[in-house]
Length: 421
Image (tube, rainbow, N blue to C red; front, side, top):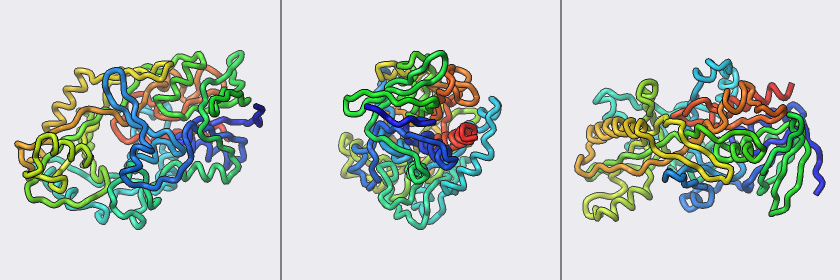
């Protein structure tokens, strides 16, 4: 199969890929976006979680969530839009202040307003403050006037209230970028230290697309595999922002639905490496109630939940066969032990029955660091091969411990401006 020649081939259409494609296309560059997943407008509802969410089971037993589709994991995000690793990147010579400001304006970042919070948030916020902790409104990229508080942001927003990378993807295409969906890039071709093209697999039909510039934005579990298939060392130092939930029941309470992660306490991040945020996985709660035969005592309407997310050790790995190694280290367990104590104190202060507290298994949500700056790429996100760049959470120098989307967008804007000159 013969393909058109493009100045730039962008692999992936999530926060990094869609942003950089938009930045290049609006500068009248010839751009092809290649997306492994399909393009579909999210229609929301819990039934779509299976449809959108792709879960990777690590060799160490950690379940890591992502989405393989146009828009990437932004489609299944909670819309949380915090700056992460700003100081760490600045210390490496990557100042993103202008790009952060630009991104925050374009995607509409603002603290979640009181109108989108429920009595569940209020109870937890007051309880935390009572014992010396501070849960503040989470910055979100959500249009408050369009949100109906259904609470299932992570299964696709049926009202279009939440910003996703589909916004930049659609704009890139309007500016002239081409896109291929349901197509996997398996290898980047290079000769004498420079990119010559990519190998793609479309319905088990392999072909080559010629280009001198490739930006891998397929995510921290996918980009390293493509790099390794291209004879470039990558895949080490994987982190996944390990997380778990702690739940408690307040007898006779009747909490209403609300958005996931409406508040956040970041006071422990700098010295204890974790954050706290209210969140409830109703499926997990219902299973626990049934397993423990608590139906006569409590219901999901009585539950309060706090999510613990930590900056885990970057000790995982992504292998050439797509398998992932990731375990919870002793250091990570110690962080969870301390954080769980804090979460339980808040829940009890909020009126939860101490005898019915329970927590969930540890999982992962933000794969990162598997093609890190100063390890696999330089500060301009270029690999040892001229014209081959990586622009997703793979390049993070350390585990973020915070939502990653805003920082990925800022990095992509910086790279897009540089390549578009």
